Length: 387
Image 1 (tube, rainbow, N blue to C red):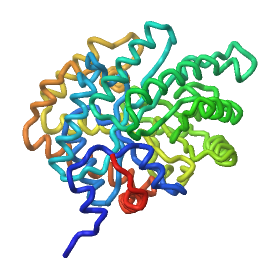
Image 2: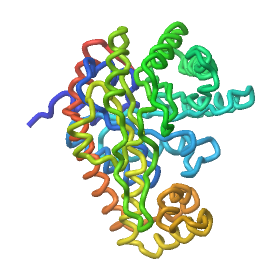
Image 3: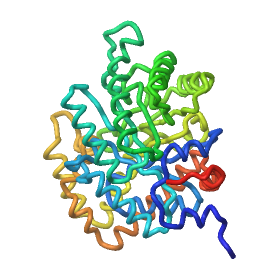
Image 4: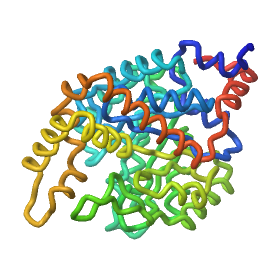
């Protein structure tokens, strides 16, 4: 039986899909696109892409600046090596329906020196073939000021400068744009006024965001009790998220919410309560790392124990249990044990692929993804999109 055209299209080797093409194709939005931060091992990516292929979906594959940098970040990966790892996984699976996203390109000070370094990080991502960029200057939000314009002044200045640099370096090629108006994990929720001012000023500077990250009660990573049991995240402020998303749409923007900090949120809550179409991008990061640790405990216990002991010895603090220390700081072991994680035996790798595949299936269903490649393919063909 001849395969459908949209399946054949994404089975053929091609460049990563530009992020703006993906979100343009999914207008009006009715789902949340899975955005995975696969920090550890090729096999996690293989599992995710196999799930995407089997469900005929496009996924976003991403790493943040802290995870991946010109010097390796805490994973040991550079933009070039991460892009190559993604490409290798795509070749193994035979599926090229993915966006290559530079998550959390962070700006924390806004100094000339930092901005020059950020530009070099952007250059490395452009050269590696990334097709979407998230500029995160939310750390510069100034709560000592009373007016929104003053609170966001530095956030906007550095965001505009960074997006201008991306535009120049991309040389007319299409790409996705994500901005962050509220720092993920803070107690203060993003206000509607803040989101609209941020988007409005960016628009004045010819920057139209596909996705907007807000502070809505979630945080990165996980929290565990003293025995290591994961504490479910229940803190997302769904009414505020809907309020901001609806206000953004009412102003004529096609921008949707990028939801960060999803790991350990119960999937039944995601499936029944998350406002699909208002949230359009769902970032899942720590979950994929936890899969690797879980598999190592059974398949390669000696390596797992070496990793655990190193983390506890290096990051342990008085009054904090070993389980809590490992939960908060084990990400830093990925780069330290890079060679060992790249040399896992075949059975271990098979188990990682299987668990990543299952998790990707669950998240895709909870996010309401339904053959997104069909809509993307139709959009690409009807609009003669080249990438």
